Image 1 (cartoon, rainbow, N blue to C red):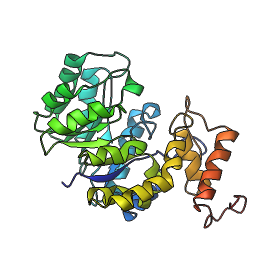
Image 2 (image 1 turned 90 degrees about the vertical axis):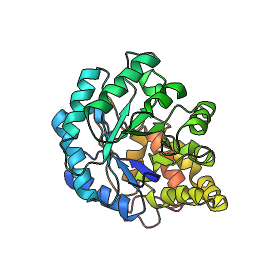
Image 3 (image 1 turned 30 degrees about the horizontal axis):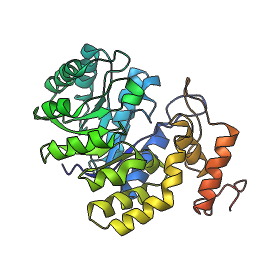
Image 4 (image 1 turned 90 degrees about the horizontal axis):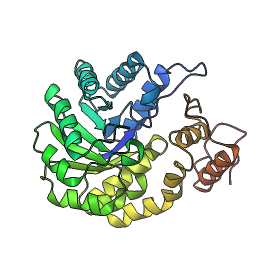
Length: 304
């Protein structure tokens, strides 16, 4: 398993009636892979996992695995704040043939300390044989997974890496400089991808790559190949778009971008709602300035 490069935190497409659009998801996965994405994460934050029923959650993972067809690793999102339920969910995922591993975030709302988080993640890892990617996202969960705790968890054989979305570069640097070489640290924020790759990160799990997979994959590949001139050029060119995906709570902006590009709709599940008209206009302006609307078949889209 070559776990590096640009991964995509996949959106979950919904039909106008609110049901999961399985055909659109299959097509989206295939489009990601043929455009160079090297890792897929279904049913995470960007995939609105918290709004999916258990049946839908498992189905989204099954579709992603089937569409990927072994071409790239698939790490399914699976997070719960009750450890016993997190363990039960991990065991259900372990029954999906072809699934590479699990991405699991800090227990949310409970705000456990470091020892509580250690025991939580250890229980999940011990319950299944699948590789585990930790996910540190304190802005969403209210809990921060500190480097010392991650290093303890890295001693567990099937805990293979972490998606780091703390935004704390000192913390991330401390982790990368002390972690075993085999332990993979992925950037969890598009805007911090290059700094994290520069200090030894293994890759990026991206929101932006839902819409611009080829460009994001090329940026990460260039950085990993020490072609920093190319990596910086791509980063500079698309940086405003990366930031714009978080003007409003994600994944509303990325779904708006996909709709503007003719690659989806803005259907979300409450409590998530579509972006405001002002934000949609901003996104359209950015896409137009980047030249991404020129080949769009929708006649009502302006080209700048």
